[in-house]
Image (cartoon, rainbow, N blue to C red):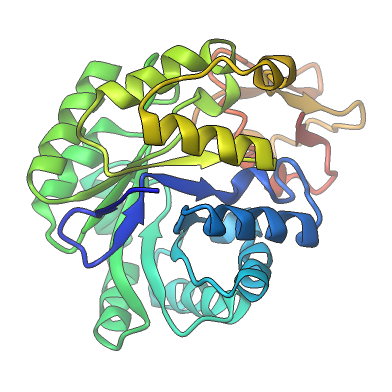
Amino acid sequence: METIKLGSTSLYVSRICFGTLTLGPLQKRLSIEDGARLLAYAYQKGINFVDTAELYETYEYIRKSILISGIRPVISTKSYAYDKKTAEFSLNKALKELDVDYIDLFMLHEQEGEHTFKGHYEAVEYFLKAKEKGYIKHFGISTHYVKAVKDALKYPEIEVIHPIFNYKGIGIVDGTVDEMAEAIKQAYIHGKGIFAMKIFGGGNLLSNFKRALEFIFEFPYLHSVAIGMQSIFEVDYNIRCFEEKKVYLEKELLENIKTKKLHVESWCEGCGECVLHCHQNALSVKDGKVFVDYSKCLCCGYCSSYCKFFALKVI
């Protein structure tokens, strides 16, 4: 499949980035073996770019996929590191669990704008020093905020931006889809590498996946797009669509489309820990149990990692 230079970086990446969130314990919960074989298949079909995060707990899938395929993909990961100690922990964990000598792209997870970036700058400085030593090739941020994309232009050290982007603007915290599109355009023009996330709105737009894909194909300011895939069929289907810039209404796809949702188990005690960690403000506690506002929920599953009772899961 086609590869493209990721902005001003030295990385050449496929137009599809394999998003591994869907494979792991926060979502599909595939076995390590099954997930690794799916990743290996994607590499063999030409997808050379994979996205993960410390939170996703999918490093082992990628490590094993490299062993199976003999192919070392471009690896992007991210963490919530905010100082030297947490940054060092995050980098060492990634290097060790992925069993690699360097990370192609390390990002700060879910940045809101210049204020949070400055607040995490001790971690940034650590990552930049690690870059000088060769442990990190490039540095960037992931974000759901228009402001963060705009503010990134002030910082040359931010080489890559991983923004939320879909035709309905689902998940954009501080603006409209048009405002995000303009911010991405300006960042792209100024040499930032851009690879989008949540083009299906965390599963909320799967009922109109044709429009979701066409919107991305019509927007010329993206280098790559992270897509979570759970089967060989999905890998083949997405590659075909991206290579031909055309959406095919395959029978198997139509039969298997399921809108994801966050499910709250009956044993939820309403402690509110998940509410504190939902950046979309989609959760609240009512009558001693967590309530989900599905108009805001991205089905990312991040909240479930904070539930000590395992009462939340994406289905």
